[in-house]
Every structure is written in C-alpha cells, then in structure tokens.
Figure (cartoon, rainbow, N blue to C red):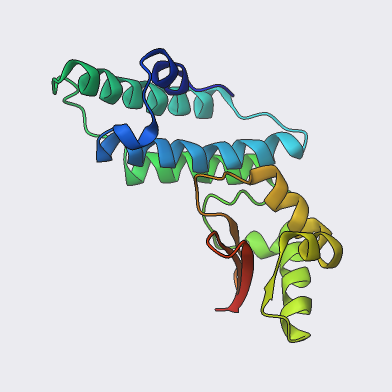
Length: 183
C-alpha cells in the first residue's frame, strides 16, 4: 500500500523530521499499521474495505498536517485519529490475519496462533540456551521464523523487534544487535 503522505513529502522536499510532532506521530502509526498489512499479505489475505478506508483516512489526516506545515496554517482542526481508531485498525488487522502476528501490538490470545507460537518457541529456546543478544545473521541461523518476520517488517527509521507474550527480541540500533529479554 502506498501512502499519499510520502508523495507529499517528496513533492515538497521535506523529511519526516521537518514535520510537527502530530504529523510525525501519525506517520509512526501508519508505519506500524503497514507492518500489520505486510503480515496480512504474507499470509495470503487482503484487508477488508473497511480497514482500508480507515487507513486512508489516517493517511489523509497526515497529509493535512503536512499542508498546514507548508502553508504555516492550522486549518486541520480535526484531532489525529487516535487511540480508539488506531487500536480498532490494529484489531481488525489481527483478526484478518488470523495466522500471523502483526508487530503492531501484542494482543491477548495471539499465543494460540500457529506462527505466534512458533516465534515464541524460537525466542524461548534461544533465551533458555543462555544467549541474550544476537546479530541479525545469527537470528537468521537460529530463529528463521523470527528472522523472516524481522526482515519483512524492518524499517530503518523505526524501532524494530518482536514482542511476544513472554519475551521480547528488540534491536539496539547503535550496536546493531538484538537483545532478548524475558518479561
């Protein structure tokens, strides 16, 4: 899925860091939602039209924030679609995926999902063996399902990693290493 805000940034010679905080927050939310969409597509499914409409509305809101920034106005009087709407989109993506975990947010009951269980098991096995940090190439060898999920959802401008019910595998960008922690 292509977002209109990306086109607007390019057309106006802007980077995300040039934008006000509200627009940056909206972009971060869209990036997280995109990760969920990627997992959904990887499982061979497509989002519902209702979900797509909500995502487009969020993208449109970010574009209005960009226009306000460019024109030095504050005409986008609507508040950012926030917690309720964003959580609703995430919940819909999780329901639609049904056999994949989007890294948008951990939700109750995902451990029954086959891929979620396999990922949790890979991380647990590595943690139990005493390994607490790994580079991406080691993850590729020791935890191929985790590697595949990280590879498919990796965004150099965002925090990357996997959160499961009992473990986290999170990247420290400064070191280029992923750390495993038990919750």
